[in-house]
Image (cartoon, rainbow, N blue to C red):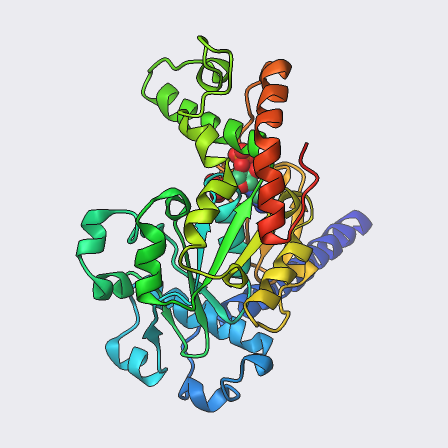
Length: 345
Ligand code: A3P
């Protein structure tokens, strides 16, 4: 009898416990989905005036809500008009450097309520075919945003492509340009690793990094190898400086973006004249990934794709030293021009 009563009590406690947990889970999910609900009154009347100094965190929630619908293609033309949404040309572009951490930078900046990112690399200025399609084609590739938000796109090939500075200048001579760099030898190895992975996927063989980076005839660094050339940052930057003053560039430390992203993001916020809104809450270290990941709110967080953060092959230390010596004078010049010094060897 006593045993039966105890069993009944346990059953009741189990039901009550399940109800309580269910309610908590519902509330947590509700907080997240509230962001995605369509607002019932015009958004302008709910938002404070579009003064960039006054952008509230609530804007982030609206941004996550409505823009999510837009991305899925669910928003109607009426909703777009009602909410005063526009497709704006970018006010800032991450022009490179390939494998510098361009994707991480774009995604992290997109945490800011006043920033909207173009998700894909558009390759408008470096691809002649795309460029011939004209500026309206480019604008249509941009995401919807509120007029007070800024749009950012990234196409790392811009940094090294001859025609790009002039083309961007013709679109907007006062545009802000972001360049994210890593220690040049590490960046070259990262570049090699990406190409190697592509070859392996197609069951193709590929040379070792050492063979590509060093000319076997002269034993000198092979400057014809693209991964080496791309890491000579100063050479590329000098071409850009024929069109834009140095104040229009901001250099991001890609190595620090990996280990301690927040201070780097705060420098970018300042460069873009945005109020500081990205906080440590938005960034958390994921030990499994070995990288910082992004937290948008209590329920929505994400890490970058697995193609970001590949394991690099081991490189002969003598080749590493040779490359580091080769890059050294170029790095010095880069520090001098940009006013940003790194502890590169
Ligand atoms: P590796 O794959 O060599 O580690 P890009 O986006 O320009 O191609 O740069 C890729 C690099 O971004 C990666 O290079 C990785 O180290 C770096 N990175 C920086 N922050 C990262 C993050 N939070 N998650 C994943 N990769 C990150």
